Image (cartoon, rainbow, N blue to C red; front, side, top):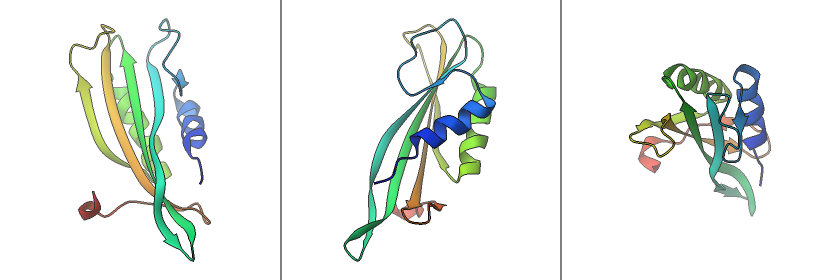
Length: 124
């Protein structure tokens, strides 16, 4: 099993502020960006070993103003890493009173070489 969450948070933090992996504790500085791993599972076995892993990540963005510019930056960073955006939607009437966007990304990663690929659409 490999873990890419630290690399994602590090890459996002290079161009964005307030990137966390747990629910934000400080709402004074906006936007707030939460990165959570939604799935990390074996995608393919070869010779009785995990050779490919499927990763799914969720990125939540909260801001007092539009979340669009931050979402574009998040998409650029994760796309550059090889992830494919599978969803991006606004949360209507978020309990926080802030603008809230949820983005989802996925990729398949070669466990040995660490190369990232996209799944075929018919495999969804």
